[in-house]
Image (cartoon, rainbow, N blue to C red; front, side, top):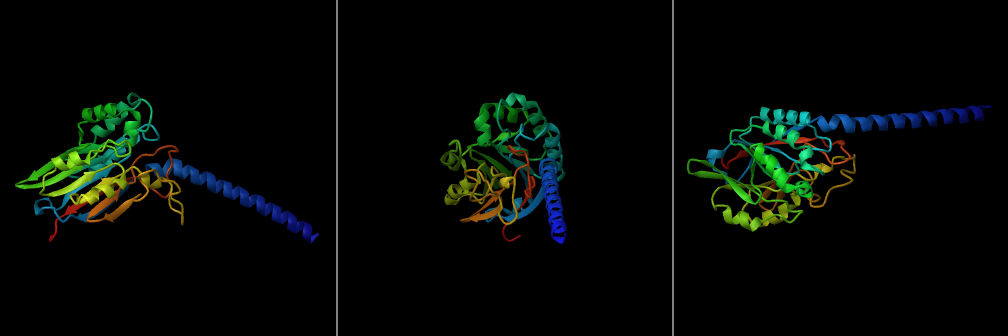
Length: 287
């Protein structure tokens, strides 16, 4: 009789455990789908740049990346992101690509334009394109940027002046799609002043650092993996986003920073990898 009770008890406990595990799994999926993708983290980061002139000490740059309108991102969510960015009172806003995910840009262009137009910084908003922008229609994405008042610096240089001193923001077009023209960028880039490079794919840092001209590269692309498991980390990372998947790295004399992005690709979930707005405060040496 006692053996029979033990078997029944064991069966009841097993069924209970299975149901509990299922409930936790369902709850976890609900969290990953409905809560964490909207739980944006603001990451403040002070970075000392050896070539930064004292006139730019304390300069604030807000970075967002990987909006991915069309795969989880909505107009309302992007407007909330823009409001949170503006609250940080940056001097400049930088966007490092993947404005859309797939399909016709016209389906999402108004929602994307509305969200981008809501961004504000005294020195404006600059951007480069990412691989998904080229997978869809790069010309249409650039048209949205123009309507939103955003300066596309893909394969170009945007220079700020304070008196006789300069701070340069350079950008390369998408490395995955072989649209990057770093030699052209270096030709446009003056020899003086600190230089920050916008490059969608973080692993481009191995190429840009080797030039010795850039103090900082900021990137996106990897989303940090979107899902990061305890003890394992991100099970999946994209090509060209595996060496420097998230956060800060030192690559030669250059700092590389990889933003986790504010949007998602499919599936539109995040777990242990919150969407991110990065706010860099640039510091001059000796200050």
